[in-house]
Length: 64
Image 1: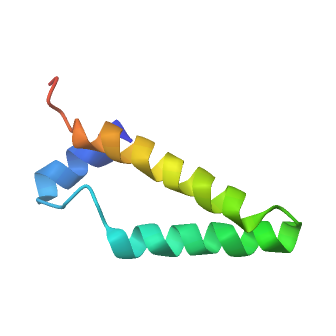
Image 2 (image 1 turned 90 degrees about the vertical axis):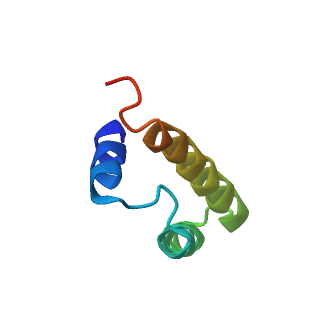
């Protein structure tokens, strides 16, 4: 994810992409439902993963 942050910085892209994040969360919720996993659990997990990734990407090369 650090590499992704570096690429986004170089390309002038934002760390956040609300549309993409929403798509990924929706996909996880649908798949969880198909597998009998509580959709709310999948949604919460994806939101946590996205937040974690954002924090790593936001650091984008500041230590370089």
